[in-house]
Every structure is written in C-alpha cells, then in structure tokens.
Amino acid sequence: MTHIYFNPWIERYKQPFGAVQEGMKIDLWLSVPEPENTQVFLIVRKEGSSSGQRVFPMEAVAEERFHFQTTMNQGWGLYFYYFKVVRETNGYETIQYYGFKDQGGEGKIYGSEQEVLPYQLTCYQKPEVAPKWYRDAVFYQIFPDRFANGNPDHIVNQPKKNSFIYGTEEDDPYYIRNQKNEIVRWDFFGGNLKGIKEKIPYLKELGITALYLNPIFEASSNHRYDTNDYFKIDGVLGKEEDFRELITELHESGIAVILDGVFSHVGKDSRYFNISGLYGKHSGAALDPKSPYRDWFTFKQYPTDYKSWWGVADLPEVRKDNPHYQEFIYGDLDSVLAKWTTLGVDGWRLDVADELTDDFIAGIRKHLSFYQEKILIGEVWEDASNKIAYDTRRRYVFGDHLQGVMNYPLRQQILDILKGYRTLQEICEEMIRYQENYPRDFYYNQLNNIGTHDTERILTMLDGSLETLDQAWGLMFMMPGIPCIYYGDEAGLTGGKDPENRRFFPWQSINQALFKSCQKWVQRRKKFDVLKYGEFFPFYSQKQQLFGIIRYTEKAYVIYALNLSNQEQSINIGELSSPLAYKGDYDVLNRIIEGEILAPKGSLFISDSW
Image (cartoon, rainbow, N blue to C red):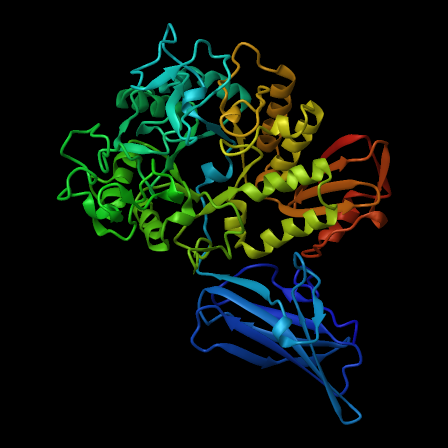
C-alpha cells in the first residue's frame, strides 16, 4: 500500500490543471496497487456549504487506477478533498487516507482521518479578463516625493508646517522621532507631478508603458497613506491642473497610470477626523460629535480613544460597512472614484486589501465596470485564493472582485533562488502551487515586483551584484504576470528598510550598466509575445544548481536558465526535474533541449519559433 499515488500537477491524475470555472467537468484518478478487494472514495467538502462533507465512490479502471468525474455545479468557492482507501484482506479491513503534503503536488498517506490535510480546488464564477493594455504593460512604480522636481529651480511646492526639507537631493532620508519613537517631523525632497511629466522621455527610453503612483492626495506625511482630503492633490505635488496635464501627456506617450487607493483609514488630521483642527476648530469627527463623518469612525472613548489601523494613532480606521462612506468612495456621482477615474485614471491599486470588506471591494469593482479598460488590483501579500483576514475567507479570486494582486511571494522566491535560501525543488513547487490555486486569468494578471516602497532595495539584498540583479530581472520578466519596476532600481539605488528604500532618484549618477540591463528585459518582453501569454513551465537540477523557466505557445518559445554554480555545465534533459507535467510540457522540454546545451556561469536566454 506504500505506492498509493495522486498528483494534481500531472495530467494522468487530474484534468484540467488548477482552478476550474463553475459548470466545468473535472476528472480525478488515484493509483492503488493490487486493487482487488479494494474500495476507494473521494471525500469532498465545499467551504461554506450546508451539506457538509460528501463521500463519492471511485470507479476501478485500467492500470490499477480509480477514477471519478464530476461537474462543478455546487457553486463557486473553495473545495477541499482527499481520498479514502478501504482494503479487505483475509477478513480484515484496513483503511488509509491520501492527502496534501508540503507545497502540494505528490501527496502522502495518512493513517488517521483526523490528521489528513486536504487538497484545495478553486472554483471561480468567471474569468478575470484584463484590458489588453494591462496584460501587455511594463509598469514603473513611483514614490512621488522622491522621483523628480519639475520646478525650474527645484523649489519645493507649499512646504508643510512642522516638516523639514533636505539640503540636496543626494541626502539620505531621515525621520525625526520623539521618545515614543513616533515621527514628529516629516521629511520632504519635493518631488512633484511636473517632475514626473518632465521625465516622460526617460520612461519611454526605458520602455515603460504604465505607471503605478503611490498616493498623491492631500496628506500630512511624505508617503501620503494618511489621506487628509481625497478630492485634492497634495500641494507639495502641485495642483489638479498639473495632474490633468500629466495624465494627458502620459496617455499621448502611450503610458497608462493607476493610482493607490487608500480606503481603509485616513489621517488623524484629515478633514474627516481633524483631531488637530487643521480643517477648522469645529469640524471633523474628533472635534464635532454631530459631524457628518462621526459615524465613519469607532470611538472607544470620545474623542481621544479610537480604533486605528494596526493601533497607529495617526491612522484612524474607517468603518467600511458605513453606507455614507461607501457612497463617498464609490458612489455613481461625486464620489472619489468617479472624480479621478473620469479624469482618465486607468485603474486602482487597493492598499491593504485585507482591511477592506469583500462587499466594499465588490462595490469598487462594480463602479469601475461602468468605465472601459480599467483595472483593479489589490495589495495581498500571501496566497490570495485562500486568504483569511479577520476570521473571514476572502473572495478575491472568484470573479467580480479583484482582477489581480501584487505578487509579493515572487520577490521572495527570486531571492531564495539567487541566495540559496531554500532548495530549488521547494521554490519550484511553491510557484506551481500558486499557479494551481489561482484562476488562469487572475494568475496572469498579477503585478510582479522585486522591489516596492515596503521592501529593502533589491540591489542591497543582492549584495550590490549587478550580474545577480540582471538575473533577478530575468526571473521577474520570465514569469507570468505584469512586471513592475520600482523607481531607481534600474538606476542603482540601494537601501534597507524604510526610509532607506525611499531615496531620491539619482539623476546625476544613473548606473548605465543597470539601466541597459533592465532596458534589455523590457525590450524582450515587448518583442516576444510568448512572455506575455505563453504557458509556464519551470524546471531545475538541484545537483547541478540549475534553475530554468520555459514560456511557450504553439508558435514560439523562450527558455531562460540560471547556472547557479561556479562552472560551465551542460543542460541535459535526463538530469532535469519539474513538478509540472501538463499539456505536453515535457515534450516541449525535449523539443527545445535536443541533446545538450552548454550553460555558462550566470544566465542563458534562448528564443525561437517551432
């Protein structure tokens, strides 16, 4: 009985691969040696269903396998399943269970049903077909205060009270904190919207086709995640007219733009909360018990003790179930989304999506559906298909919700490959597990990154190695999804955690070798459509320290291989492994690698048509 076997990543055991849409058929097979006097059952539980656990007998078929076919007609959601094998020998009955192990794929035998970890099957309502501009895009993330100052003399617009401005753009960011470690003086370099507009030629030279801007609305801090007024551009960045001009020139240059939607909390000094009286001594929820914003917030003891985002007093948390607030953010008329999307914004990235209710996100998505060619992605750091936040399973991936998420796990996977933090097998299996759990379109809609305003600079994490950063670019651009470059990573910026990762862009000292390395990968993505739409097939050899990715279509393929050892090696099909065996993937590998390919130290990129 030790050879009972199932693997949903192999076509022989599950069809189709991965998530399935409502109404689709699914086939499962379990291998059981010596199947005589044996019964096999598939045990399934649909999360949230009132029918509870269901048991289905499987049919014995050829090659010592048992088969079950069903139609997914029980509704969208997460299904969890495992197998029960009952064998009778000499009047004795033995029962074993087969379920999930480690990252997924090949499972394991369990002796007790209470111990079984089930496999996950994602069933979604409908595909999340993103606009073509988004699927084809190369994004660039800009932290507005740190990118460029477009004023002729680089004077800072409307400096804020109780803040400080740096002497030069080369200075290192620094916070002034009090004895409680609270930031009491925000620092500004003075980057603005005119600066972004001025640098459009640079963005076009790099090959950028879309921007993701960190918050631009009026706020007290330099990062602006503490919104003071959702309807105003922050004065340091400029005026609304500057934004209108920026949108126009970006679009004329073939560059889309998405904004950061920070809707889970506001700033304590905002016109909505206004604890300091910045917006008048008798307005705002904290100063006026009869304020129209009073019911947006939860006060434990009015007005000084209130619910805030992760206990940060600067960020009072908003009640997302409040109808007035919902109408304010995504109502049909005069709402925050209506104003800025009508001005030409191409989409939104929802900050801390876990803090927003599913209904709130669905409301945003419904609002955006009335416009053409808009995109909605969310900040989710883990597997979005099975994320639980505040004791609630989130419905990000099932349809009419988020269209994709920021692919933070990919950054760690790339670092693990390049730094040797985990085995190549573990990393490869984790990649496949995400692919399995996400609906196909959702998976291809992920915004891939190796650096953001919330992470250490990638060049610092790679010990300053330009060659290794080129390999990191390669892995990010080879993966399904949309690549996003964090401003300055292509120019040589370094730094640890905030505030070091938010230095001003080094316009006078751009590392040209890094720029050309990044530009090369941007050009490859534009040249080879297979990098946007092709099937994904990873492979590795732990012994040889080789890791590779193949993207392929019926007409073309590209292969990217990393030789992580210190010597030239041969890529031989017989020495490679992959957890995935679907749609003729291994046939593709055989057709590409005929005989042997020499892999130099570093990386190897091959492209061709069939």
